[in-house]
Image: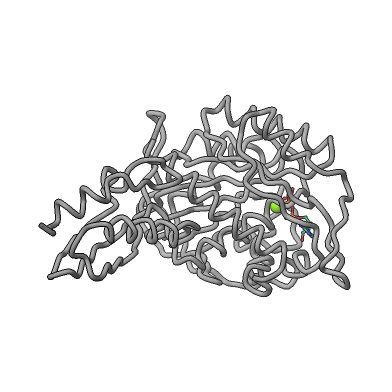
Length: 354
Ligand SMILES: Nc1ncnc2c1ncn2[C@@H]1O[C@H](COP(=O)(O)OP(=O)(O)OP(=O)(O)O)[C@@H](O)[C@H]1O
Ligand SMILES: [Mg+2]
């Protein structure tokens, strides 16, 4: 007899590959309907950025088709990103923001902002609601990279504290110190003030509903990292590194710091892994030696989320304010960045549901 229960029973062994649990037990199968031999249901994924959605749908269909009497299976796919919970008593969530992801590194200039901007846009391209917080108060680069250089942001007057309206481009809401100062003026502040600005960027911005709030951190292991870890529950941090030995040593330091602060490290991204010449894109050169990110990931027992090649178009995209995942989605670096974004989204779901 074909009914809701028999459909759920036959779907029970089908697992979410990332979470390694039954879709039925995870409450990811809903609205099961049977009409004659036609079966339909909704598959609710934990992230719109799920790279395996086609496989999961296929697995579900195959399982249901083993039941006698089934003539068609219709799967409607949606997503509900799980919400990260506070882990420390003094932490306050950002209202509406489900998962906060810090992009960090021990060393400067390794490509944090480039990675943060492109993964934010890549996540938005999958249909996720995405915010980007430029926590590099002293050297904000995100407005330029997101094509929002001369944007004037609106401030709503409010007796409980003014509310900043984020800027918006390529599907991403964004705030940066770059909007609040003259771009040529250096910012010289001490720690406590920086703490205040970052808290304002978290709590006094009209973020609305966000599946992911990506935070572009300044280099190093300083006040901004400490403020973030103390203020909000984070889904996790990702550490950007390059293959050079010094950079990997710095990455290790960054990783240790997050561990000490109780922040889950989602993984390492190796940037500038190899060089792709623009006139011979089928070639690649290992400029700094290969396998460093993989070695560090093994040594420190954190996942390697992906490797991004050194590509001139990636830098140009940053300089011209059109992230490469928008302008050249078929390029090697855009493909790597998109895969990294999907990987991060998967790890975030696992962390939030743990
Ligand atoms: N894979 C890459 N290929 C080519 N250029 C890159 C790549 N990654 C980063 N760049 C370029 O390197 C420079 C530094 O990158 P980025 O600003 O993202 O680093 P950062 O770690 O955020 O630096 P900082 O520590 O100063 O904040 C930029 O000009 C950027 O366009
Ligand atoms: Mg930066």
